[in-house]
Image (tube, rainbow over all chains, first blue to last red; front, side, top):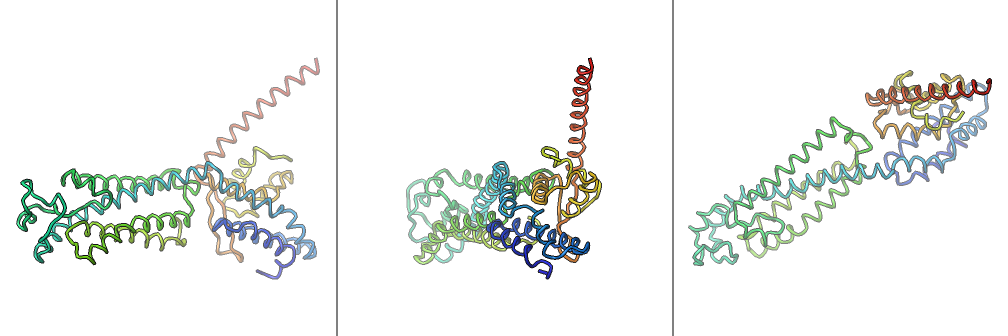
Amino acid sequence: MSASSRGAVEDYLDALFDRLAGSGGHGRRVLAEAEDHLLQTVDEAMAQGIGRDTAEREAVARFGEARQLAATVQAARTRMVTVTRRLVTFAWLLAGVTALTYGLSGVLTWIIGFLYERLLAANNYFGTLHHPWYLDPSGAKVTIPYCSSQPNSTIGCLPIGHDTLTYLGQDLRIGMFVGATVVGLVLLTSLAIARRYTLIGLPAWTPPRLSLTTALITFSVLAAAAPLYIGTYSVITRDLQGDVLADLITTVLCVAIGVSAWRLRRPRGTW
Amino acid sequence: MDVKGHLDLLLLATLARTGPAHGYAVIAALREHSRGSFDLPEGTVYPALHRLEQAGLIASQWDESAPRRRRVYALTVDGRRARASKQRELQTFFEAVQAVIGYRRQGVKA
């Protein structure tokens, strides 16, 4: 801060700073604008022969009470309609991320599971099978050739709710995952297009960066917790024939979302 | 002079006239163009500028070339449309008021 900002201007900026606490980047912007404006006003008044103290007092008086300005700025920032608009954008994004994560976890498991199944078979991990969908229709003990002849059928693909959905059949399950992947991609692509060409791209529709990334990090941590625990437990107990692949892939996807959100929490241009 | 209800149009019209400008210049131009009638306090103008930006009618960016970092505002395409629309509304309103005032004057004279 330059020498001309000391005195009334500095006191005013301190007061404004205190009242804008917690307002994030917008508050810092208001402060910077206020500082520039007040210093320019003071400089011009002094150039006309007015003393610095008087110039600062007059500049501050013109600017209005710090408390009232901060309240007006905060109110404009948090109007209900703005909050609602941002929630719409956030819900749109979260729905896309959730659908894509869910769908992609199943699709990737289905694809990688083909190789994983053969890896298990090659290492003789199919000695004792205990899940009902591992049994062949006659109820006989499952054999390695049977498992190998049923691509991916022994891999639980569903990271969420697999206990109920695995009985629906493999075709239906992979169809659901592909469908969820497509829905997620459509949601995220349409959001990107809408933000590029419509009012959705305006600041009034854009959730604050910190709130958005915090929500995504929270989502990724919560979504990764259960599959990480189950997957790790399965690996430790060498129960590798169940849903361990799905659990670990889901964990990796959630971690990727969390890390991306963490890296985006600081501005590097416009979101 | 009370500009309540017309502040948005005044700011949009000022930015249309000056081109991209920072808050201080907007306030000064508004004062100058109105021949001193609209000498608005900064505490009114800055929140209004932020509100217009939120609505997408103006856009802003930091100007790093000045000795002090400044936020420069400019009209968007939507802002130009909004300015034209508000200006037409106000014109219609003025004409209606003038018609009413003229009628009353006639009545008084009679």
